[in-house]
Image (cartoon, rainbow, N blue to C red; front, side):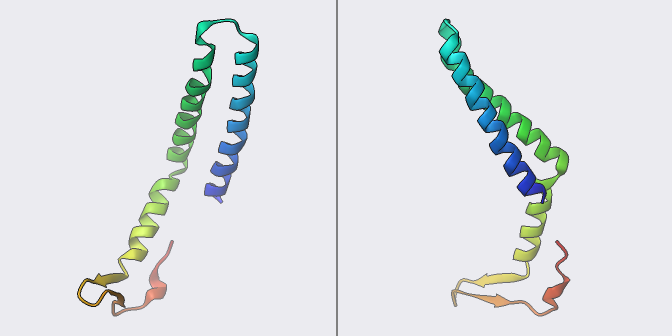
Length: 93
């Protein structure tokens, strides 16, 4: 659910950034007005990255992916996945 929340938050804030950038570009008469959109996108990216680090989602997903990948190994000679011996229901992600 944290991933869904961050995705929806990113979409919603992305829409707000587009609206604000469009209003700045339309109504501001300055040379820097076209630099507002990329700057606001960068701020949005940094904000979402910070929220992601607070929620520890990247660490959790990476841990679960690497842990479940270690249950199998790829045999280069036979080119198919060979399951290791053991109980596969022990993965707790």
